[in-house]
Image (cartoon, rainbow, N blue to C red; front, side, top):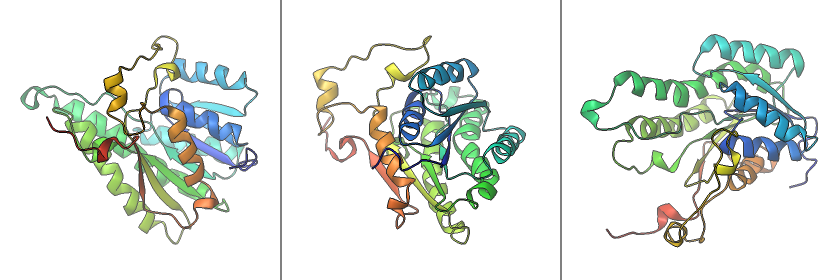
Length: 260
């Protein structure tokens, strides 16, 4: 896709200050988009701005907790004032740590918190972004799910449930927003290495064993750019006949049969 395709288009990426979100923010901006990053980690947001502006990319950071309705409303009001429309909403913000411990020891409040960010957040963002999206020529919503929506390790109740719900929300929104001309799709990433895409305090140099790589039929662990390239396509009018779908990007890991 041409690196000028998104010129004069605005793209909002929630949870865009680190990891996959930051990778997508960089790629959309490289393709010409005016990128708005929102994140509840102000330190990470400031570092993300520095990183992207060093590349002379157009990016704006607005702090926001997507689980809080008032904050989401205020975010969209700011975008209305600055841009007047929104071409794409990428719902990426989420509590990423999937492990919650034994079921009997799990705090229900912790379960609720994960769902409030990972599932309620995308719904709120879609609700309040809709008037802005309807002003765009080819509006799109992209939800970042996870292969954990379809498979689990032990004690990943909240994360798996939230991502499974996000998959269902994707097709529900796609059907519901037909008259609004908004396409809605999802990407379900597998193992994506984000060590080099974290804020400085959390950054680390990745190391993967040959066994780690061999779990993937493509022979390596994923990187944020793998997700970003697919996001660029799905949010464009090149994907105009695609809606209500989920694309698994995991290097083939979920289709590989493994015997214990």
